[in-house]
Image 1 (cartoon, rainbow, N blue to C red):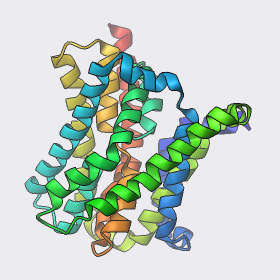
Image 2 (tube, rainbow, N blue to C red):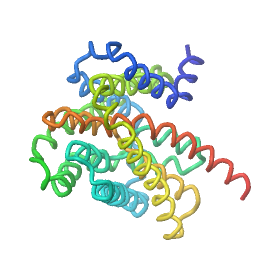
Image 3 (tube, rainbow, N blue to C red):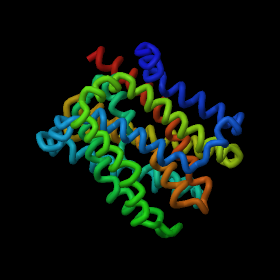
Image 4 (cartoon, helix red, strand yellow):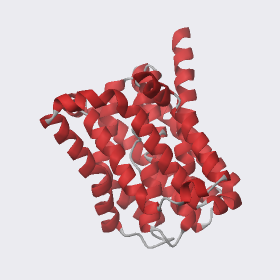
Length: 310
C-alpha cells in the first residue's frame, strides 16, 4: 500500500491531467457529484495539511520573520498584479476575468511544499510561507478580490472571509488538534496523506471541469494560455525577486515555487460559491490546478539539473 501511495503522490500532475481529460471527454463521469461537494473536499485537504504541520513549522515564522514576510508579500502582490495585467492585456470577459483574479488572490498551494522538496529548495521556509499565507487568506484574499474585481462584479467580502475560514482555517485547526491529542493515529496516517490529497485534488478538478465542459470547450485555448502565462510569470518573478535580494539559492527556489503555485482549488470553490452568476469563473482555477502541478514538476527537474552544474 505504501508503494502505491508513493507512486500516486509522485505522479500527481499526471493523475490530475488524466482526470481533467476524462471529465472533459466524458462529463457524466463526474457530473453526478454536485459542485457543492467542492468545499467539503477542500476542507479534507486542509485537514490533511493541519495533520502534517507541527509547532516547528510555525516557529519558522518567528525565527525567520523577514523571509516569511517577504514570501507572503510576494504571494499577495506578484500573483494578483499579474492576474490584473492579464485580465486587462487579454481583454478577458467578466466571467473569466473574475476567475483569473480569484486564482491570483489565493494563498500558496500545499503542493508547493512537495515541489520545493523535490527541487532541493528551502523546505522549512516553503512550509512556513504556505502556513502564513493560508492563515492570512481569510482577510487578504477577499480584500484583494474586492480591490481588483469590485468594479466588474459585486464582491461579498464578508461572505468570502467566512467561507475561507470554514474551508481552510477550521479544518487546519482540527488537524492540528488531532496531531496534538491523538499523535499515534496521526503518525500512522501521515505516510498516506500525500497520495490521499492528490486523489482529492483530482476529484475537485474533475467536478469543476465536468460541470463546465461545454463552456471550457468554448473558451478553452484562451483560458489555458492565460493560466500558463500567469503561472510561469509567477515562478520566474518569484525566483528573480529572491536573486535581486541576494537570497541563497534554496530560498530563491522556495520563493519561486511558493509564488507560482496557488491554492487554485480554493479559487474554484470561491467562484462556485460566491460568483454562481458567472459559471466560467470556476474554469481558471480548474485549469490552474492541472497546469501548476505539471509546471511545478518540470520546475523541480530544472532546479535539480541546474543545481548539479553549480
